[in-house]
Amino acid sequence: MSAPVSVVLFTSDLRLHDHPPLRAALASAAEVVPLFVRDEGIDAAGFAVPNRRAFLADCLRDLDAGLRKRGGRLVVRSGDVVARVCEVVAESGAGAVHMAAGVSGYAQRREERLERALRARGCRLSVHDSVITALAPGAVTPAGSGHFAVFTPYFRRWSGERLRDVLGAPRAVPVPPGVRSEDLPSRADVPGTSPGLAAGGETAGRGRFAAWRRAGLARYGDRHDDLAGDATSRLSPHLHFGTLSPVELVRRAREAGGPGADAFVRQLAWRDFHHQVLAARPAAALADYRPRHDRWRTEESAREEVAAWKEGRTGYPVIDAAMRQLLHEGWMHNRGRLLVASFLTKTLYVDWRVGARHFLDLLVDGDVANNQLNWQWVAGTGTDTRPNRVLNPVAQAGRHDPEGAYVRRWVPELAGLAAPAVHAPWTLPAPERAAYDYPAPVVALSEGLARFKRARGRE
Image (cartoon, rainbow, N blue to C red; front, side, top):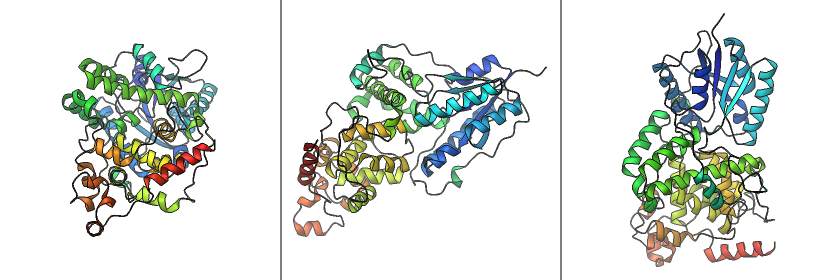
């Protein structure tokens, strides 16, 4: 009689450390098939964009290397996830499939389809919580509702919950012979990536966190909004692909202690908050969480302004700097994300979905829960308790880039200007303005604010 086999379906959890599905599979079976399916449904939805495809290729190669050090290997297939998993179950004789719980509507439907298909074949599906998030969506709920709609009360409850223990990486991963695999993808084969795209994979992620924990965590609370200081962890791509465990990050930060660690843990709680909102309201990926009857301008009706925003030539230096960072790195500083989103939705009064889609086209950490719900938070259709707030890009630049170093880094045509003129070059005398090859503002801030107030006044 052959030894029992389990399949571990990797999705957004591309790591070996602190991986409950893998450890559960190894505990219950003599052999395990580590499987990743390049999902054709994600391709069809336009989600498999170059930056994430390249980062994913790094992650899969690193995961395969880690498995090979433990006597195993990664099996890669392409196509419909349910069909490919069922193929591997049939080839290996597996009696169980283990995977991490997803939160999006697509992920939930995929799990339901997979459970039905496996049950028909006499195979069991085990879906594990607290793998992609620190606390599972729905683990804490308010009275009378299935999810929290406001962060502060959620954070109070979240902070009082005990997180599960962190699991070590397995010593050995025995894989049955004869289960075929496609070739691993390579970053070099992905055209159109951002030139400054960071490296992916668990090894890179753990190295980055270890270095930042030593050198940056203690000052995170004071410096995370410093645009020029670039003092954020930059771990969001690793959280998106699951090369780092959010449970482990929370626990390690709490072990370090201090205001910086507290601020970092709060950001991880924000991530969990958005995931529990989306899990409860999957339609919020495209529909307003709190409809406000906005008469948004579309990309077609504001074509020139939207193009200027996407290309980093709005005439507002801090906005253009952030958008150019996005184009170059496939990543943007969090404060920059807030500023460019506020500018698009409340100064240009363009539908938040236009900005959210552009971000998903470029961001290596393009996560449906965080991206869509952060955009709604800024646009005033999401969970923000102050939906009419407008971030002034000039005032914000003076506060978070006081010397203008961030702007000069990404908008080199203004490198000769000192602060505060670098944040408002249109205020210079005409002869001085002519010396800089930089556009005039696409709209006056006062005009944009007046338009926003008029539009919101029609509700």
